[in-house]
Length: 248
Image (cartoon, rainbow, N blue to C red):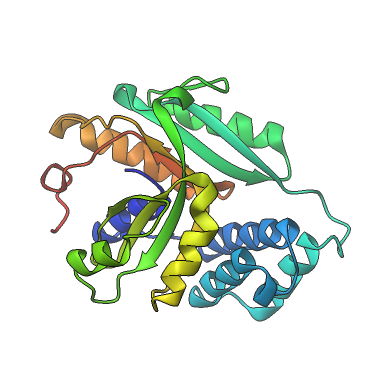
């Protein structure tokens, strides 16, 4: 699992989706708040905000919630500041995990994540505990839209692109961190729909859990993913479709 999109592709194929609409809306609101805070409150002038709003609408988030999140991100509402934080540690069976979170209470979030690590046989560490196992990258998530892997690979022949992971629903393109915006513009010019764009972490070497271990690792990552403060998860685990019982 290289990033959040890959993780959700696996969860969807196994029929595991967000069970609580309220928790999903909380996550989406935080993404909009952070996007609005990072640039213009006008989605046409802030691509990150535009994508966050589109994702919220696709999840049937009420327009009033979207407007409130934009206002909060723009500093128009007197509420607690949302912080972007990164946590690292080892999950069950020694898999390395980097978690990006958004919270208005860092002490609460740290305590709850530490509990989730420990409950599932892992250990949450300090900054740098597993970060050295990953390389910073830019990440673009593309709507595959019926294109073949060969077609996407041909489109990805752009300066700054490092690699492409094909998926029939949503594919992932890795770029150098400094090339993220220019590569996104090139894809949009080619008519490709970019559904997400962010700076992420890619494992230098992946590890494959055994059939007996895979379920524990999957359940741990699912527990992290269900936490309303978690924005994205990066891990060095490499799930084999057969061992997870997922359809190919």
